[in-house]
Length: 267
Image 1 (cartoon, rainbow, N blue to C red):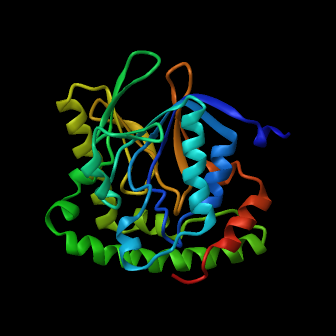
Image 2 (image 1 turned 30 degrees about the vertical axis):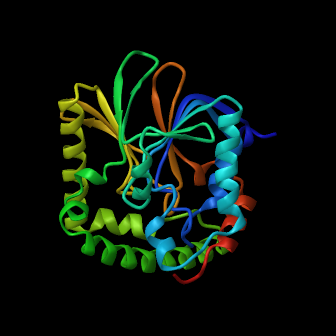
């Protein structure tokens, strides 16, 4: 087993925006990640299942079922697992406070790191003005996003054939469009303000598919990213430090090729 394939154990893992039930979901890469990474506590920080898309068209291949089974297996082996619903799996907000298969459903959780710092763990859609005040616009944006992912898949299929590394067209566009950059900044500020209001040292969220870990106005802001574009997760090491893991940089080339074959060339 190479260093790249070596299993690692963390104090906590944070995963969000998997979007099971969509064609853009990188379920095979997430399965590969879960195979080689484990933790005492696992936080599923929203949009794990995409109820919006499943209402329109049913798409649930075996790999998506395997992700659910893999997570439940970790719970049976002793990992404590929290499921914090987001806007795409908001139907689970009807079950806050319940347990299923060893998974606890909560609207938000305060996580205490190994060095005693407290972090508010929340999906973050509650602080998205589009979601709160113009949900119809969010649905429209969701369709445009699916189209961008189709182009993204085709582009990266060609890049792999040319021996180039993974590159996210949609993530690049976010950082180049002035309004998108402004939105990310406002989102980070709003989540940091909420963490400060609740008296925590930091916030760990998802929702905007943009992984990050930095200080914002005295608050440690961490975003887990997603498993559609960037395939990222956040890990807390046993000394209390946090790391953004970009799995496309660690997965075996054959795993990336297999995942690409499962993705549609058009959305």
